[in-house]
Image (tube, rainbow, N blue to C red):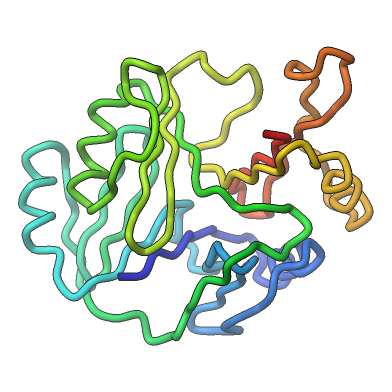
Length: 229
């Protein structure tokens, strides 16, 4: 099983520049173009029909597709299936092996700090969780009654599901999340030094009104939460 984050792009060169400025490595230059920070693997897809989402690879999705069809519309494709989860995020189920040897490292090495998975805002956490459990994700923390829940997949990718009105800042579905354990100010400085625009500087979590959390977006619109947690 492999999990690849997919981001669309208006220009492949522009997106590659964005990621390399942030310290990501190009692990596959074309067909597909994939960059990594050591933990996250991101396909920059120039196809005009590409959408921000998540690609999951395994030999067969037959059983999972049957279960998903009982919950929501599923479009079967030549390579597997496509559907949208309860937050509107597109999930691509690809049958077969990814013909690349992608091995995650112990630590993230980009300027963004520690990759902690994807964050999704959803109206119904329980309904969203049901979908991800069918796909093989296991709950590690939280739950619908707490207003958030974290899930982990054997491939290494994690997701956090957030209830409405829990996050007092901009939210883009989906967004990659980075948690830097109180060391976010140097991370923010590196982002600025790289010439990456800050979409939102967040002060609401800081008693002194310091911008210690920021949000950025790549050229295709994929969100990044770079937080001080």
